[in-house]
Image (cartoon, rainbow, N blue to C red; front, side):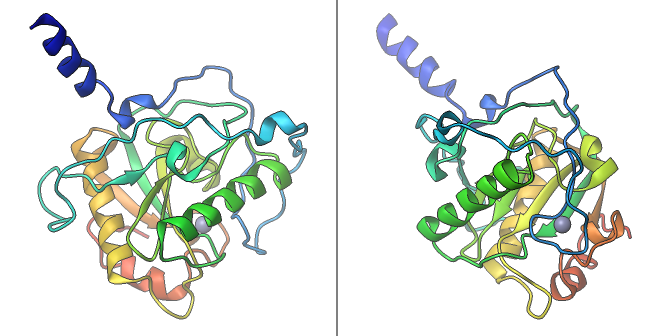
Length: 242
Ligand SMILES: [Zn+2]
């Protein structure tokens, strides 16, 4: 019987969200939108080199959250999050911890390719990570989470690691980015619901303040991000403050 109970306890302890890391060695990580031409490239960017940096992270056992699929805006249910291991992330070169709960959530679009399946979105997220690490010289993918048109939520640098997405707001915010370009058309209902569910999840899990403010990237940096159509949507969301 002891073996059975130990197995159960171990299974409970495998939460994907326990896997965010804490690092104290902080190197300045420049900020700019992934493909937003309105922002200057980071100064002093260091290009990752060597094949080792392309090694993808070891596959981990996924942890699937209950609920939130049928009622994404209710209660403390969190959306299913596609882990870094599941989309084939590379290990980060460095991490700086976020101190929870952060007071802000910043909404972006990637201004890149849209995607509507886990396979396609995983490929696009890998492309973005490569771009951020190899071309911009950042330590990791800059967003905390990314959201596909099928409503899939992809773990970026995660809940507990400071992202590179909103300049001076990086230390005090979570950056959520919709995969695609949303200047003319808004994201799908599935994607919008997933994002709102993720924000609620962040509050319920203590990563985001209950009195949070939600902003578009354009509200904090000189950029058109997250696109006019998406921006109009988020101005109606709880906590929005320009
Ligand atoms: Zn942005």
